[in-house]
Length: 240
Image (cartoon, rainbow, N blue to C red; front, side):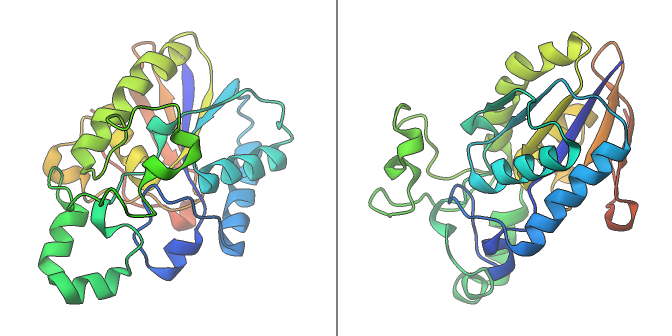
């Protein structure tokens, strides 16, 4: 039996501003910092002894993890960062105000881009200053590897091989793991772990800063699942 905790980063400044964030490196708000610290308190109260942690290479996920580990008195835990746990790339929508984008393109079209499983927004332009190919943290990666837009489907195609090759083997060894990442990269993992249908996964909402505790059996399949902050819990998929 092992434990996997999925933690979406606390509220970010662009969450608050209602802008499409994706791969843009945005920091936490004060509320987001408080959510991260509360997550750490809840995890400490759970008495789970974690063996290591994983997170994306985006500041909001990294700082959420730091703050949570500080509250847990476990800053010494080994942490592995990888871009494959990054948020979904919102393509040409990146940086735009969501309400203004809906006025420009129509609410129905924006809803399709945001919530369909396999229809991505238009790609970001190469010369857009928010294009991740201009970000030093990705300098060692081929430009062909970096997405210019993603749907939830292609986000899953990025996240899942990493999970299966780097994280799942650690769970199979009985390790308890914490993943600090993003709404869509974690939604992709939930789709895989709970075998959620394509049409249903887009309705799964993950609250910021609320640890999702998943107990896994010997076959690495979920046997139980719950949010630690029940006051901010959302509906969970059924265990298959």
